[in-house]
Length: 308
Image (cartoon, rainbow, N blue to C red; front, top):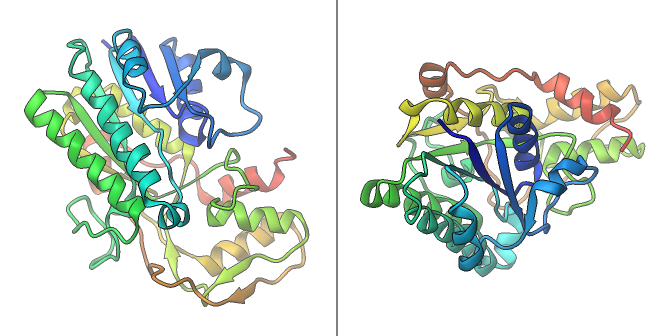
C-alpha cells in the first residue's frame, strides 16, 4: 500500500491539485519544485510540504527518494515556444531531470509506482484521428522530443531495472491556476485574460483547427486511479476528453460565458501548427473506468468568474 509520495512540480498546475487531492486522502506528500513555473494563490499547506530544489540535483533527489514509496513526476519545462528558443533547457529539465529521478528510484527497493506525466506533443501531426496510444510518435518541437526521450528512459528503467512505472500523455490541460501573465500560457488562459480586459480573443489562423481540452483536476483523478491500481504498471494512457472543439467554438463559448459583446479577431496562423488533434480515450475507459468529470463549459465558467 502506498503511503508517502514524492510529487515533483508540486507548485505547478497539475502538481498542486494533485498534492491537495492526496493530502485530503490522508497520504503523506513531499513536494519538490524549483518555483520557475509555480502557480499563484496556492494554499499555504503546499508551501509547507514543498522542498525548493532542482530535479537535476542528484544528491538531494537521492536523499528524498529514500523517504517515499511512490513518485508522480509532474515537473517539466512545458512551453513549445520556449523549447524552440532554448532546446538545451528542455534537454536538461525534461530528460536529465527525469533520468535523475528514476535512476534514484532504482536505489530505493520500496518504490511501488513511478508515474511520469508526459505529453500529447510526442505524437506530432496526426495521421489518424482520434489519436490512440499506439499512434506514431513524430514530435514537432524540442519540447515534444524531450518528453518522448524521457518516456523512453522511464520504459527502459521499467524493463531493465524493474521500476514499476506508468506514463500519462495529457492533451491540452487547463484550469484557473494557469498563469495568464505567462507568455507561454495555453489558448484558454490567453482568450479569457483578454475577454476579462474587454478585449476580443485573438485567433491564429481561421479558427477551424480543433483541440482536446482536459481540466487539471481530471488529470489528477486519473493519476489517483493509477496509483490505486497495480494492473496499470507498464501501461501508457492518453489523458483527454476525447472530444474535439474548434478554436472558433472555444472563443465563442468564452465570450458567451463572460456575457460580453465581443467578436474574435484573426491573425496569421503559426507555422507548423497542427490542424486537428484529439484523443482516443478507450484504453483509459476500459482499464481505469476513467471518464472526465468536468465539462469544458463548466471549467471555462470557473476561470471566467475567478476574481484572482
